[in-house]
Image (cartoon, rainbow, N blue to C red; front, side, top):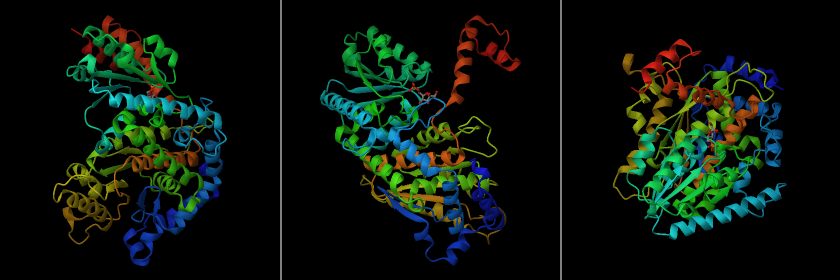
Length: 512
Ligand SMILES: O=P(O)(O)OC[C@H]1O[C@](O)(CO)[C@@H](O)[C@@H]1O
């Protein structure tokens, strides 16, 4: 049943109208000494404080009822059973299987055996390349899910990266990016990874062709040693001239693929043991999501909070501020995960939805964001729920920095909630602005794996309640088709049939 037709939805609307719309989290803390405990919890490898959010026991209870009424548990079971819940592409959704141990209790035994066979081969290759000191530069060529995850994780786990290799990520079809990277490279010291689930993506194919041409023109000889492909389309990789391939399967969505062969740059960076730890962290979160009661299930609580904010409070964006510079690319990674998954206007049945879906997700690391857009978060006319990520232990010895960093994260969350009412005018902070606070003890492969899996299941939860297919991305197709039509027009100048604006701009952008 569509979520907006359920009795829980109606009750949530009543609760919002009666109490939710003027809920004051400061009063809620004053009235309940146990609020922090009630609305915070541990989950594998991390801790989350939800208590500064605009929720009370009744809203959580009703949101849980909404989850039950919309069949969240059955949908979750269907995903873990390998049913084709990606109905528009008739595919299973089994990225979770990529991180299951070889002896896991799952009905998908055959696929699990293939997963481990590929994983073992990929990690053996990663270790061999790590030991090959003639390779000093690894260039990953891929885009979207074939870029954002590995790039984000290699940066995030910088403390675990063995010295001796530089990692480069080329995604954009803008040749400035590839040309800039190639400038500093020598073919005999470079390994190119062509990462593409489909091996047809225009940007990646264009960059891969140019890299191959550069390799030959700069005296490179042994393609088999200097190129590898990470793809479900092994045939196309061979046709391109690459022998060394690591495969994966159509049941791994692009934005869920960093756990597969697409994660090879991560394995090259942190080693086989580190990559297995990364998978183990995610698996621990999978088990939590699969088995914990809904009321203590962190991805479920977060996904339901997202529904509460989007559909009842009407908040259209959510911001994330990782207070750790190594987590700089996490917002970009999560943007694809959440917005490509849940940015849908029709339900899984293809019928238009009468309610909002994915919020806009955005953010920058703290403390940087504080000196840029936090002004709006504190005093703007719109309310934006903010998510903090703070790591207790630093891995550097620079005196004073980490304490200042953590103090800032705590202070910002406090300021958003408490506000400052008595100052008046321009100095008035309304407060009561919601935030969630994640605590990692250390930034390790396990912790990062768990955090990313937490987000995946959170997006699954809101998507399931909304009744959408979170695993297709038809919205990216139209632009691709039109780009193919426009490309030759830039050379020919033919504007026939184009709208006035596109024709006018094309005329200005034509090469002179
Ligand atoms: O890995 P591929 O097939 O090159 O696709 C790259 C990205 O393009 C998309 O299909 C969107 O165009 C993403 O979903 C995907 O992660």
